[in-house]
Image 1 (tube, rainbow, N blue to C red):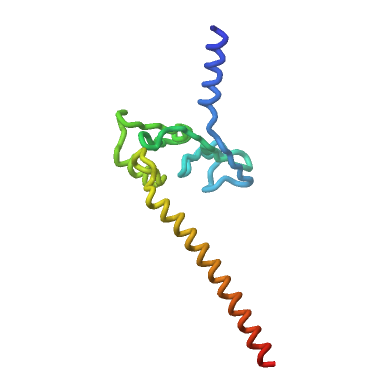
Image 2: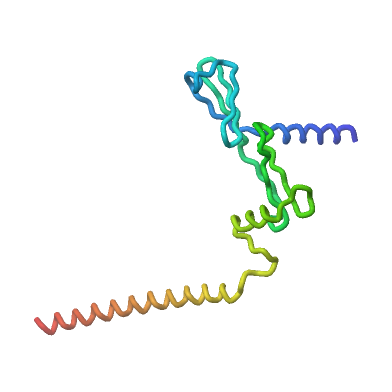
Length: 158
């Protein structure tokens, strides 16, 4: 029991502590900053000036699995690294906004109901593809016929 609890805490510490993607600049620090200076950039980044270089850390990649019809992800408007931790807001939770959920659904092009997409529309798309293919085949046949006619006319004129 004690070992499994210890392992669980260690895994949480690792997951909770991994935030970063880092970029390094060689040369003087921007804006006349001195070694030891720290500044923040838009997009949840923290930069630190060192001797002859500087580094900027950002969140890296974070993935959260959730049902987009019931929840949305929001990032806190704080400074690095707190801005890297996504907040999952679902229906019924404090701070949940129906307007934000609707906006996220529109951005993601998620259907608003669990019902399948309009079947009539799907049939129309399939029908359109078939019509397009048939039209292409017919055009090709027409071109071949015209070419044969031209050859016959040419041979008759000779």
